[in-house]
Length: 474
Image (cartoon, rainbow, N blue to C red; front, side, top):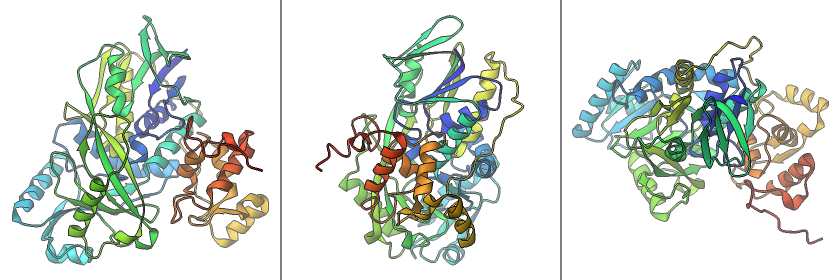
């Protein structure tokens, strides 16, 4: 019997698990995929929004601004890269400037610090590659960038180090209220928990319906992206947005904390909650917008494209409430969900306390997690000392991203453990470089086979059914 079961191991579920692991509670985090951070968390814009876009008084506004303030400390504690690079919303004419003034007013009401509208001369001094046609920009100095899936992995890992249990490949099919606890089943296995938190992303309305809550629906909103080689990661310094529309914040141009350049996303409401395919028309839409935004965009240096699904609720705001006894929704968490995630965790903890969960602080709680990339950031002297202690760190497996065998082994044996090729990729960046895993993948499969004690051909790309090698030929 667990005190709390959290359904969905994305960044929101991970942050809630980490928050609750600071109390004397038994916690179980369940995830339907083979690894954590497999939904919207692994494919979004990686932006910590300042908080000027949300309607004043909404949960989005309150939690975005609070989460943005918290994020730098959270990232430092979890050993995750974070950079406050600032953001700009670009206006091409006086009509769009009116929208900037509305956003400025909203931001000031929401408590965002440092917002101001700048003219063409100043914005082109700050960002020389912005197109000459851009006339104004709303400058938000508190905007930042982070790696969303690294943040989720670190949060879940820190929660596990503090006693939380993780169950992957647990696709919740039923939730039964037994009076003083819930019985949660995936059709094969069951867990019992006194309280349940619903963080199931695009499936959060389906999970809510299992306890009789049909007060909201979630529509998956497809967003396609393009990633540019690190050679062009310094094309812009700020995160550049276009004036937003009812479909979202528009197609952005942004550096990443790992040195690449990110372009996108598109915005399209669809019905299929599993469709993460990219399309020729979507990628064309991105390039058309980028060519309007910056001069000489490096479109020939795109190394990959990908797609994510945002959880768009019909309420227009986050759905964070208690629809049934001992059951909390953290549902419909679309943008700015990543930015809000630490504050959402605080808010959900308060709701659980209000619902009757006894929360006593854990004396030995440790909020600190070692950075996963510390080796590559060491000086040559430090690396040599490290290699002397563990020679595996002296063997590079992924040359594009300079990832050593030691880092891959560590990822396999560190909470939450990597169990397949993509899981290693998300933790170490192996396979994320220019060759996109063309050279390093066979070596990583061999390491996974050895460390997990399974046959080479049983190692998968991303869980059950994603076969890499069918059989040995010799």
